[in-house]
Image (spheres, rainbow, N blue to C red):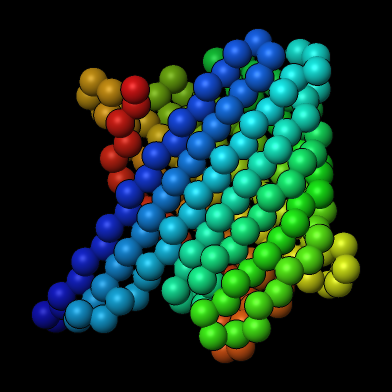
Length: 200
């Protein structure tokens, strides 16, 4: 039929790595509309600093921010320290596991605001399936330490393959789950993004 639809996703990811520390920044903005009606609008940002006590063990301080019109979230703020262990880190594969504590705050558009202390369990994985296909997965799980049945998680999985020069084709899936969402909001939010990425 005659459908008027527009979708836009813009993001970047930056990492600085030395022998002693690692600093990373991430940003993603999604917008969609159909027949002049907004169907998606969210912004997600992260900042994280890791300091290595040894070749594999490190401490970290992380910050995560989220704004999502359709989850009724004006601003979600998650910040806190923790410990990590770098299991692998080479050109073919990388795996890091993390555990920590975070301050979790939801400033809602219409619902009740809430804040509490959570644990944090994280996983960052990368593997070169072939020379030209790389799989990555980043998981953050936040169970409340005050209400044990309350938790949120965010998982970002992606496949990338090089095209020409520094351009890369990327297929990503972003899964968000909230065990206790605002009234009339679903617990699961799932997004697929196919786009071009430039490496520098």
